[in-house]
Length: 496
Image 1: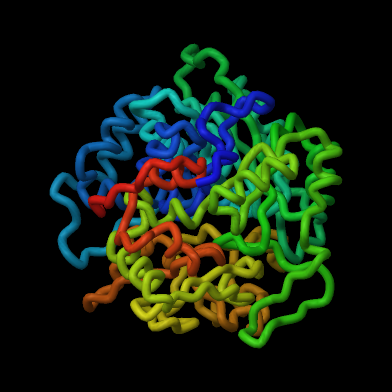
Image 2: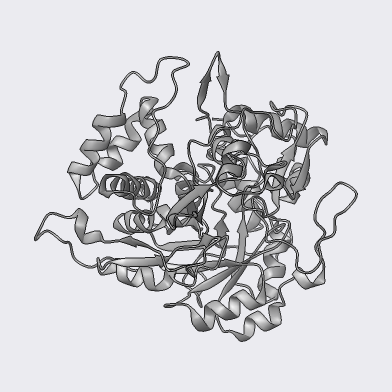
């Protein structure tokens, strides 16, 4: 490869952060194994904290193979919390075949102390395991829109010493100040987003770290992690740079080719012949204007190549964020069966990434992978509707003035009864259960039925064959070496 490619994985001298950020792909795709491997290779490994509390208790119910969760839980500074979670959820022999997972209660604004504590513990465990065995940096990714669990998740991750917090899918203007307060163990609040709210959004989500510590045992202040906001527009970058509640340490500029959720196109909606939303010049971030803010930024979406890293740095970026290449490596949380099946389709040229304008209950466009081995057959609604995880529910103001929760992917009659329009339910898919199934923890529904997966990837999945080179699998370290432009041959993966 060209000698102009980067030849080291040292930290960027101006930012103190690596040039490669591994994308925070949820639920569980960017798990602790993947983040640890990337961090050990000198780049920024990132764990996804989306629904990590439900993921943790399902892993415990499946027996915690290798004892990894229990090892991290033994280091949680509030052992009574860890012991209580083990007593409630750990099954040494695992679940009997076909037995449904025991569920956590769905989060609400008034969720009690115990519900907050299992969430704190889950954030701690994921980051703690990612930090084992190396001296690299570890980040954690959260979705701004998933407001209800975010405060205890952030605190748990900070108790484990997380280095960087990355947040998008909304306007995380309050988060920098939240990080400042949590580092000092001070109470924090977030303004709660409420639909149909004649009261003007007066409700808040509160979290007080001091309530979880025995009297007189509050620890020393924590290190405040750096904060990177994931953005898709110059206007959002400007708002965060000028009006955030505290220091913003950088931006990740995510284009419409990135996997998962995309920001909706600006202007009047238009669609291509396949029914995908069309993005135009108005949707591109002006990097020259972004540079004027004087805040470091990384480019994301369709940049998974060594040439892209060189081009990004030439444009003034500190580096790139890469998801799809890492999503299919050996250490990612995707189930081995899905990885093998999708990579085989990539090699055969039979994989497609469809930007679905309807699939996500959020209303944001969502990338859906279509391939011949898809166990759902590519159906838009291949399951009986049920809402039992509830992470993407939106709060709304009921007629009696109270707060309710609804999701357009829940049973249609329930959504309409809660004041939602039936038209909003068309084509919606349950991301919570589908993404949980992607990583091998789909809920059992009886009669041998298990929740079907819903796989998402960036648009560059189809071009992954260039990197594969005929292999059926690869470790994360090979992705790092490839992106850095190193000439070392890529060994055949074990596939484990």
